[in-house]
Image (cartoon, chains in turn brown, red):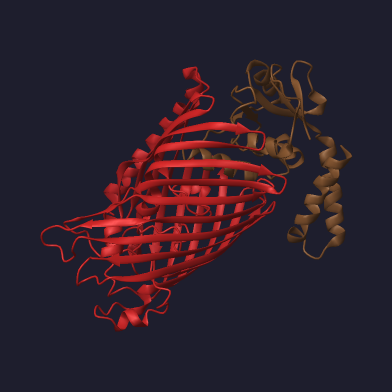
Length: 159
Length: 399
């Protein structure tokens, strides 16, 4: 956990000079703000209870959520569920767990959908709906805030 | 375009925009999670200070429309079939008739821990640079008109899609992802290709032979940095009609594109560079054998404001002949084509507003020096004006 937060803060430090040029104090405040807002949304990857995997690499997680990785190692279809682009959980998920910005995911999906080379993920509106779909759909993967973790889904750790 | 046609079209658009979303929303109701339906519709308005672009634009033109509808179905976890119908209206260049933009089978046959491999065949989108795969979807472009140095609209069909096959794969490493596509296919050419390379729509036919097409993309951190190299190499064959001035010959084309993109949270910097060799062979006395290399590049900066607005600035440069960038040799030549038809330097400023995730409007202003990318179907190249401006407004809906 410690490592992940450091990494997230690292991203913001790298980008912030563009946002707030020559303002190291603001930069620090901004980083702290980002750090604390992430504290409030600790995110957990979850899968359908029948899935064998308990751990995946960040690059594989990215390939799955970019809709480039289509099947689990046993050959079953991966079904991806996400919240809308502007949902606070989606933003936190993209940045913390995948290390990307939501707009990068959106572009990857659009490229797939409008060139016939893939499909878009399914969108859910609430954490209750997310849990329901993950439980109901074999091969499903999604994410949820740690506070709403549920025994009935499987937890997937990102290495 | 007259008012009657515009009214007729706008009514159709409104009708479509009411019909399509329920259709798309209904697709899960068909009971099949393997089916997806998506689409887009855009309507543009173009006004130029001189010259014609996407219609009679110096009087204000509504002749810019993009309608697309696609469906995809996952037959098995690794096998997908998909197709997209497209209607594009672009002044004299495209008349809005329906065409199959792509229609293909995609078999993702091998999955490893650190990547996968697959095969596509049918009509596939031609992989060129960073934008070509979805060039007609306004949401996926940064501007209403893509940089013409690389994504030519006057010969768009040469780049658009091809009938053939493609091998593709991803390789995930600790230092980023490598995505590649390589294949062979015949470009789906049309009369615009003839206008661009032979100056007219002749009785005979200019058709695409088998092209080799390849692209490699390197992505760091899921696309924070994207680097890409493209190559497209093949021949266009001309089969003359009885009265045509050219003989049975070929035009060889080799297109090379290098691309770089940096995506921060709210800043996006993109630059691409292109060279295109055009090699004329056996076309007869009116088009002596010869080689020529066109060249182009652009630099583009986009900044997201608040969460729904984006401001865009770009400088885009095209040369039809890199050994005659200022066009003086062309002007001194037998046809006396004015020098400014050989280049175009386009400064663009744009503003995009995403009113909802599905509805967007974008306005942009172009200051252009040169007319290299104007079509001879819409302009008499002897009478074009060198310095001109363009305003473009576009509304787009997607689902």
